Amino acid sequence: MKALKRIISKKVLRSKFNSVALSQEELTKKQRAQFEKLKANLNGTTLSNHFQLEECENYDVFAKRFPVRDYSSFKPYVDSLIDDHKKVMFHSRPLYFGLTSGTSGKDSKKIPYNKEMIDLFLSAQQFLAGVVQEHLPESDLVNSDRLTYGSNPSTYEEKGIKYGYISGILSSKTPWALKKTTFPSNDVLAIENWDQKMEALALEVLSRDIRIISGIPSYLITIFEYILKREGKSHLIDIWPNLETVIYGATPIDQYKEKINTLAGKKLNYFGIYASTETPIGIAINNAKDEKQVYAFHPEVLYTFTDVARRDRTFGIDEVEVGKEYFVNTSTPNGFVNYTMKDIVRIKEVSPVMTFEIIGREGSGINLAAEKTSDEQVLDTIIALNDELTVNLDHYFLCPGTRNERPCYQWTIFSDSLNQDHTEKLEELVDRILCEKNLDYGDCREDAILERPVVKIISSHYLKEYFNANKERGQFKMKTVFSCPEAFKGFVQSSFPELQLTLGAL
Image (tube, rainbow, N blue to C red):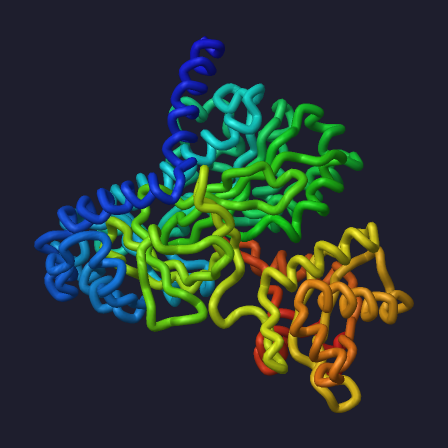
C-alpha cells in the first residue's frame, strides 16, 4: 500500500511541478485565462458592480487601467459581509475570516475566505510538494513522518462565521493521505498553555522517524531547543537521524538557516511558500540549502505590478523585466481585486521559469541620508557577518542612531556567544560588509555623512522572554528593522521593558 501511494503521489507531484514551473510567456497565457475566470466568478457582486470590473475587456486592459487599492478600500465590503449581507464580494457565504498577524485578536485586519480562497492556499502546498519532489526525487513525501507546527486550529465564531489564523485553519485540513504521518495532532496544537503544548508535542513526535519539518522558523527553533533540552541531546539528528528537509512559511529563511542547521547537526534542505494572510504569492522553486531562495509565481493568483521607480505605471506580468523591482498587486476569488500587497520583488529570470526574489515591504528598510538600505541588504549583511564570525547570532534589531552628533546605524545583536569585548570588531565588520552590499551607504560613509555604526550586544535571554510573551499570537513574526528611533523606542518600551535599561539612551 505504501509503495502504491508513493507511485501515485510521484506522478501527481510531477504534474504539480509542471504547473508552477512556467516561463513568462506561459504564465501570461495563464493570467489572461485567470482574469476571465475571476471576472465571471465575481460578476453580479456588489464589489464588481461598484468597481466596474465588467468594463475591463481583458487582462491587458485590467493590468493597465484598473486602480490599485489597499485594505481601506475593501473594509466597507468586508464589514458588510460580517453583517451577513449577500453577494457583496463573492456569491457564497464566507467560510472563515482570516486574521492578520500584524496585530492580535479582533483588532486584526479581517480577510474573508470562501472555498476558492482556501483551495488557493491548499494548492500552494501542493505546488511546493511538487518542487520538493523534483529536487529530492528519493524523498517519500507521502509516507515519511513529519513534524508540522501551525497556529492553534481552534477558531472563535461570530454570526455563524469562524475567525482564525490561516496556518491554524490549514492545519485542520491536512490531506487524508498525510494524516497518519503528520504530527502533532490538532488536539495538541489546540492546547493553550505553551509548556503543556510542548510536552504533549514531544510525546507525540519523539517516537517517530521525523524526516520533514514545517512551520514558521522562529517557532521551529524554539521547539527544537525544547526537545533537545528535554532529551539531553546536542543535535536533532541524534533523535531523528533521517531528518532532511524544512518547509517554512511567513518569513524568509535566510536569517534562520544557520541556527537551524546548528541545532540539526547537519545541513538541511529548505523550501518555502511566500504568503501572507491575504494570499499565497510565491512557491519556492529551488532548494535553499546552499543558496538564496527564489520563487515562482503562484499560477492561480492574478497579478499586476507597479514599477517601484515609476509609481504611476502599472502593467501585467508580460511586461516585467529581469533585474527590475516591482510592487506586487494581487487579485483573488474572495473579491480582493488589484489589492496592493506593498511587497517588493525583483524579477530574477523570465525563462525557462519565471522567478523572483523578495526585497521587502514598502516603508521597511532604513534610510538616513538617501542611501536607502533595503531589508534584503540588511539581511545579507547579517548572513555575511554570521559567516565571518562563525558563531550564532540569534536575532538582530536595526534602527537609526547617532555617534559624534551625526547619524549612524544602531545594531542590537542578540547572542550568547559574544560579549561587549567584541563590540568594536562587530562595528568594523558590519560597517565594511554593508559598504559592500550597498554602494550608496559606502559613499555616505566615505563622505562622513554617516558615522561608524553603533553595535550593542545583548544576551539572548531577552529574546527568549520576548518570544515566550508572544508565542500564542497566531502567526507571530519577529521584528528586525525600524525606520525611526521613535518606533524602536516604543517597541522596546512595550515589548522589552527590561531591555531598555541595558540598551541605555536610544
